[in-house]
Length: 278
Length: 292
View 1 (spheres, one colour):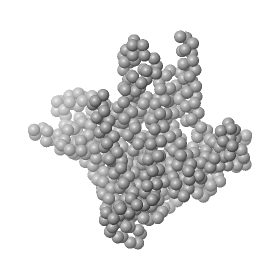
View 2 (cartoon, helix red, strand yellow):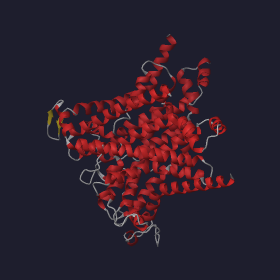
View 3 (cartoon, one colour):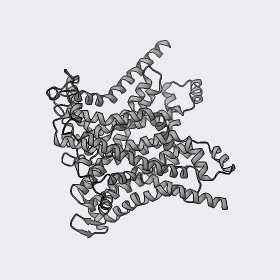
View 4 (cartoon, one colour):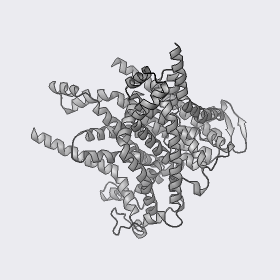
């Protein structure tokens, strides 16, 4: 019996190690390449551990002639403003869908979910025309507006699951005490869903931070590009400089990894609740 | 009754902002795409074709290729993400040293921006610099370096492997939550009946996780079917259009060849396919739930 338990433990550790290798391999490859000087990048056969690790690639990403810092600021700007707008809209709508009964509610909510069924490529031609008519092509605003197409439904859906988790009795008591619906919402419920608001903002930020297709289509000038497009373009121009490219890629990952580290618990709770409760 | 009416109005008031945005930014463009799909449209000319446009689409050999590729891509990615998700969730549910740390690590591929994941996998598959070929040769699995992304027969499968890696943590998260929801009494009852680990898994764990698995499969199916970045960044649909799926081909038609009508038709078929698939799927899973 003890022996069986021991082999069981060993099997678990074996699987855990295999899982870690599978998950980490691409990251290790990226870090390895980002630490290699040009002469080490092109050796054949390739090897994983740099013989003379250097931080030069990281310095060059911020160095002269590099647009990385500009792309970073652009991405930060677009993602932050989008997130704020989505949060402002989603707070009200998700509460409405979670708590208030009105005719047509289910149909409207299904419509909201239906908007997740088509690829964004399916609406990009009409959107491009709209942006063109409004003279918005090549502006940050075109990105912020087009990001609302996918982030509003996701934000409402996710935040709704947090509202569903607040006990109804609290508002009902407030309503009986003479609060209006809006007061009950604003003073009683909102403070309770703050963690959910944090998780929803983080998820929307994460989606808009990495958006690629709209950014590739609506922005023409180099100075307004966001990070994903900037990184993609890097390969076209300097197919050879993998060290710089991987250093930049790692720097792009860091903000989202840090955010996820802090809100992981709330976000996972919201995603699983939201998916299971519909 | 009066109270109800007031309640209704406040309900509409609360959802109005998102409803307006949704109509203007999503449903109006989608409607326009439906309209465009009946036209032959380019930068210079617009001609009405009507249903003839769809007849032409179904005869187009690219259409059957894209459909086949999209199904291969989606089914393989969803299947292996489900398998890996379940497996990793079962591992992570156990207690071992480093468990919390590994839970944090596992989520990283899913959190990583898609474009960057595509770049990293391009490097892994790189014919000269890629470590994958090197390790496969060292281990004696292949004699010659494989061409991965530059071979028409392999490119799609190479991206599929990357997509499995990129997306499986979502399944892991969902199944971990599902595993925590399995009532402990069921395991205890099964133990009293003399069940071993395997039969506990098939008779207790899997049936209790049914709802989670159904939802996760549907979500990953829809997301994967419409996933643009990885294919676009890793192969651009090539070589020789061999690895295009719906979203990448729609984008190419619209913004590289300016064939807006064709792009809209592919988009409409993509949407309708997912709509019909989802309706059948939801219906079937509810039906079997009732009979179970």
